Amino acid sequence: MDELLKAVEGLPLIVKVLLCIPCVDVFYGICRIVKGAVKNDIVWLILGVLTVFPGAFFIWILDLIWVLTKGHALLLGEEMFS
Image (tube, rainbow, N blue to C red; front, side, top):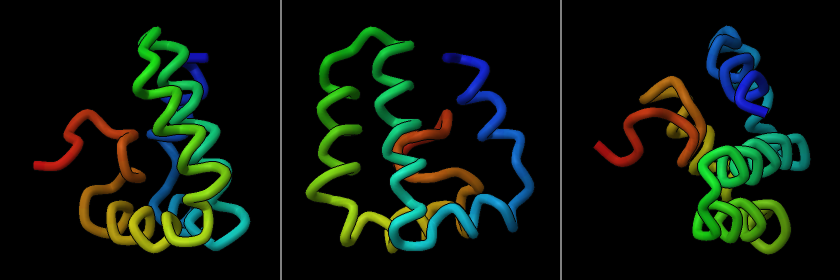
């Protein structure tokens, strides 16, 4: 599972931006769930599930902003909010 997160981090910027498109952004939600499983942290799992189902309608905007400014989707990089 950790390989998936490393592979996503290594994607070119244009591919990361394309993954922020509504309905495709569910991929980043799944990555958040995987990160929660890798970290063995229930809070990360809950955040991942919340961004897949109810949050999928607005989270793509935040992911797009994060990808363009920080190079990774919301809650997926090494630096979260700094």
